[in-house]
Length: 308
Image (tube, rainbow, N blue to C red; front, side, top):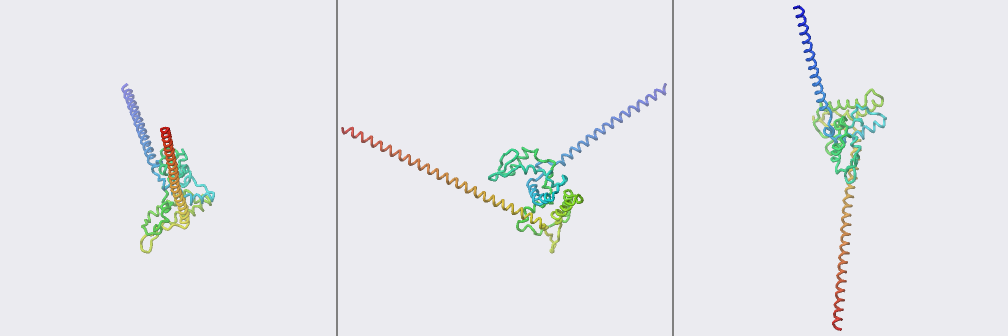
């Protein structure tokens, strides 16, 4: 009987310890899951871009213009479709839909094509889109401003400014090597080297256009000379500069016409105001004359009545 009691007690202890082990394992699994959930949430907050705050719209617009004039036209001519993994694909452009739904109105105003509201400047329109139409911004899209080092967005503004192209500046070989490596990675994602014959051809052309000049060449005096853009890039930049110059001339003539129109309207207003005042004065003078003539007639009548 004592042996049976001891065996029963030993079985109870083993059952109790197994239950405690299971509870401890459940608690550890629960804490591990909570920790993993917190890590995932923290990663999403850090990695996911915030629409309208992390991406520079102005530089993205410059990069989009460069792609429109240099890359998209060539791709469409060859009948090639950019894959979705390519950061230059239109399907992943963060602000492309916003750019397609705004229009420059008269007198330098901008119109929102989502709601037809008019704003004085393009910056006010962009703030309106971010506050009133946030669903039109691709929060998981690509910010083209992040690829300005590959597309040379700064050269788009400074290529034809005097004293900027070809000037002696310090060039960091490691930075240029990283830019060159990133340029090759972007082109590999857009034009896989072994994808097709068209992809290989486009890869070679855009590699020569965007990547080959990203080097530091030492000058004779030991200073580092700024990189020289390729002939194709210079030609494309000259075309963009000419188009922007034509737009500037057109806007200048438009402003001059607006000024002349306002001045002409003011002159017409002053002229008609003077005519109206002159007619009013003439009417007043004629009324005074009629009044004085009536008084003279009354005096004559009174004199005639006194004589008789």
